Amino acid sequence: MNMGQNLPLQYYPAEILRQQSTDISLEEIAKPEFAQLISDMEETMEANDGIGLAAPQIGQSINLAIIKTEDGMLPLINPKITRRSLTTESMEEGCLSIPKVYGDVRRPKVIRVSSLDLQGNKTKFTAKGMLARVIQHEVDHLNGVLFIDKAKSINQGQDILEKLALKG
Ligand code: ZN
Image (cartoon, rainbow, N blue to C red; front, side):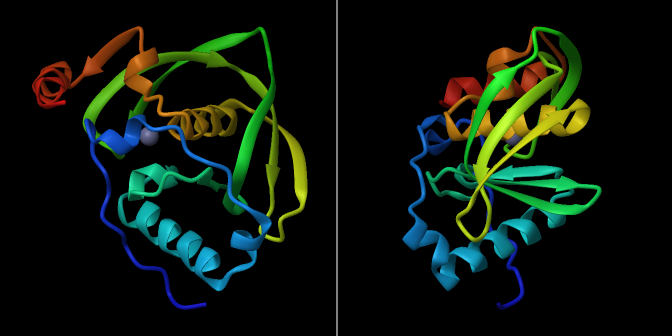
């Protein structure tokens, strides 16, 4: 695999950020181009100091996201959140596609996730805390949903948001 390349980001209100992404086939997962794409997304996430990145943010409407964890990069391929805890918590979020805007979003604390790994095998795991939050944020991206849709308050950048909304 070649070194990852820092790809240009898509910024709100880009249309692609509102599209429903499509599932990736096992044939696609097996291609070297797919491994390269993940490598490029990792480089892009690192270059922008992100903790997660979804494919629509680099211009691809496919169900792929990567998450930065303590154990390294976690790829999520065709991820589904299959269970959500009734207990929720509110935390401040931001997004690489909406720079300088931050707001409080309430989300379930614990989730059950079903996804494919890099070999195309089905994996299931439970996530809580920060990991659960980032996964929910990224899965929202794959469904065309942004954190500003769910934020009960925008703590920073309301003015930026209003100017951008006029362009969209
Ligand atoms: Zn985001």
